[in-house]
Length: 637
Image (tube, rainbow, N blue to C red):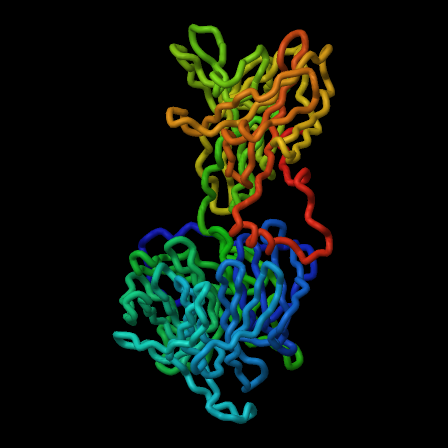
């Protein structure tokens, strides 16, 4: 922290990461813009450099792709230093500077589900035109605080007036919009603009800003109690700042960048500010304890890869546990008459990723196991580990998970295997399989350490998977903060030679009778296919072991298609580890028995509220939506 007293506590563990490559039409660098996030999408509006713009850009953080939606309706004029909030797929902007010395008090709504603008005119007297105010959503109340007004009617004659008023707008569905200027108990914060404000529960947290000099104070507005209170924070107070950003991730407020006063040679704050500079420091306030926490220091310089360069007037938005920042003004630099703005995109990784769900089996072969696990949004990659599954003193006869519902044939690896009653498991060492970028991987072998030729030397030797052997698997997610916890263990068995392969090209569609499934015979039948079996994943029973799933056979016959009736589907488990889906497994049988099954996830319609949010992720298009047959996610071939 700039100018902070030395803190003996260890700094928080977070890391900056630069996104060097994006696709799509990226916006031009600017300052004074604002951003909000809807799921994995960051929506940016306004700001400017060579003139104020009315452009809308969207970044898909899952793919690092920019796109510019084709908007319609009553589009607002370009503005900067305005307020921007998000309520589901409904976005609201208020105020801002539309040209030098001329500010706005217009309120606009953007429905992101169809990219449509609308000019709103609430009842009652509106707030005066302003810029640099905060605009936050606390529950269903949109709250404006402070900002800077121009007391002159002539835009060319700018007479600044710092504000500390509060306006509220109830935006609950079914209520008419009305401006309210309530009276609050307690001492009101000093007037200010270019401060930061975040929502934490039922409270609005105000930090810093500018009213002739930079501020470093923190205030709480309790919306339920309708009262203001100053915060006597603990820890080392950060240097005063303005035009900084602030976001909330879990119970912490992360504030980045902004204008700060130049310190005296002895590190003290000047009594009267005469010089300012941009910073790239982070201030982190624990909102539970109201304690400033120690943050890792970063070089306060340009063109370095550890952290973003110093800036102000940038924008920040949260996706998951990451804080994304984009562009902003790079200090006093100018080219011709324009400010120099940063043209970079970063995110702050604030914690290690959580554990993925248990590894699932997609398909088993005689010398391979194709595995799948859930996506962790904050993961850069995954570490997959393996362990031999051996039992001491008893035959290795694995029990199929959900065995009461599935007839377990020889070589049938249709689920996780568990030790039979009375078997004692031999503890084996875990070995790394690979660092995996995606969430699906075919395991054919792994590396184990062995003694080398010289004393104390070790070398790695590859071990191939063997037919008819059982193996345990676990996976953890990794990001720049480190590796997260491992998933629960899952165990699977490879097939014996001579058994058929797994069916392929599975198609599922709705029918009047239920679900229609069809498939192609396995590429390697190892003889004549005599029959197929289709299994349906069932709702878990109260006595079921956590993380397990039982399967019931819903079809057995020689044909390569079947109907699963509505009554059978009523007992299906809807898996929500990613998108909601019903799970089927299909296996083929020859004269030796059943071979491995192909697992397929049949995507289900999301809840109505999720549909609207999902629509935001799609570009406006004249292409009709896919039919139901295309709404499936297959984890088999």
